[in-house]
Length: 62
Image (cartoon, rainbow, N blue to C red; front, top):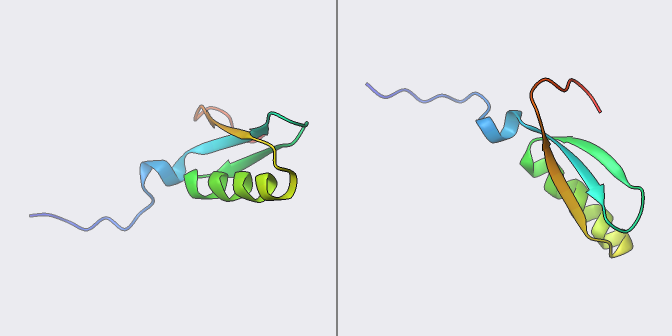
């Protein structure tokens, strides 16, 4: 029997560090969606390119 698991998916539980190539901007994000939102907001404000790096599970906070 199949079950519907409504808990967080693996991607949502991952943490990312969003870093800018054009300045010292750096911000942590919970999940891919938040990392994308952070990067998009900064890119719209500055025109800079950003990179999101997945943090290992052992890293509690940035």
